[in-house]
Structure formats: C-alpha cells, structure tokens
Image (cartoon, rainbow, N blue to C red; front, side, top):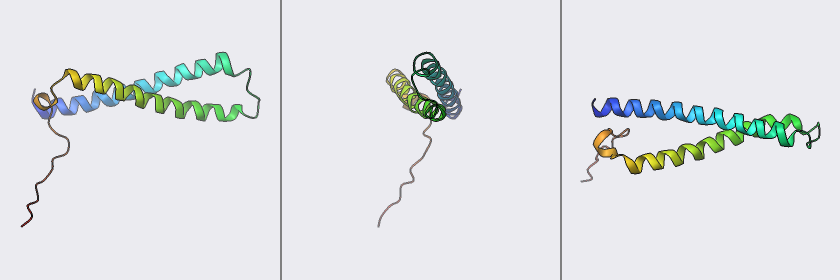
Length: 94
C-alpha cells in the first residue's frame, strides 16, 4: 500500500473509532445516570440530563481519542507510513 492510501485508511479508522468511543461513553454515562443519579434529581432538572450526558460523552470521547492517538503515534513512524494531510507551499520572499 502507498502512503496516500494508508493516510486515508487511518483517517477513516480514526473517525470510526471516535464515533464508537462517543457512543460507548454515552451509554456508560447514561447507565451511571439511570442507576445512581436519576432517583436523586428533581423532576424539573431531569429534562437537562440528556443534553448534559450527550455533551459529556462528546468531551470524554475527545479525551479518549487523544490518549489513544498519542499512544499510537509513539508506536508508529508517521513519516514512514503516512502522507501529510496538509502540504505547506513554500513562498519565497524576495
């Protein structure tokens, strides 16, 4: 496989992983809420819980994604296997 295909597959795989991490963290946070907090929260505040759980799952999936990506990048030589996503164009000043 060439570098461009490796880069595309890596970006697609990372995107799928991030979506799965968001769904998993949403399920975990919702189960924690349902089992421990739902009985102690007043009825008027329960309408906001779904939104807060959703936002918390997005934030937690971001941190999970960053940690896994940081670990993966220490194990893989990026320059050897991947093409840069953004290429700088050298602008010469005269």
